[in-house]
Length: 210
Image 1: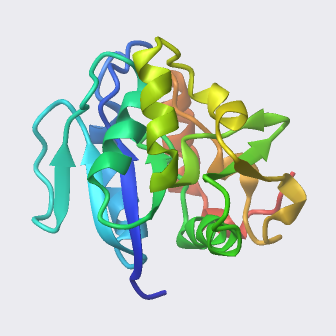
Image 2: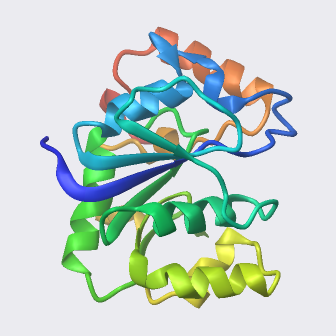
Image 3: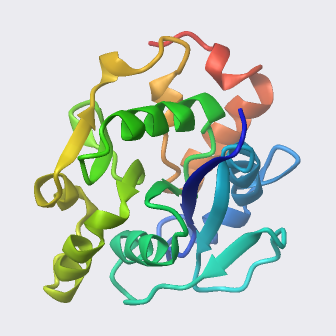
């Protein structure tokens, strides 16, 4: 895959209350989770942004930015990422999704390119919107900012607020394991389980779907 004129926004500014420590810096592969995600998308995106409210040691090609409207959860991170993005299309991912693979990112971007009249491409998994592994157009920025200013902080509300394209499970390539892709690390036991699985498995995209 070669770099494309899209921005990639990695949300790494959460408080990680349930985890008890910074998720982004947890060991994963040869580095940590954040660096692992960067490595996944650096050959796809020409503009990588990390939204974080703490200093991080990262490659010079990566921009580290903070929330413009702070203390409003991940929706603040999406807002800041879109505000600073160099391109009209931005792929957004949370830093607690370590099983991301380039093919999954490219799938989102393919649907975004085919639906440029939509504000966002939002995956559905087990009937739930996955707004932290999605693409957004800069055209959605005013709606998101208005939601934040009005005190509506739930990212799950984006489906109703935006003119979105919903990516259902059957629309994904059969080679992508959605169970792994959408596995969030909410607490330390989730991380321990995922870390153990990752060390014992081969490549996650080669595991059969369940």
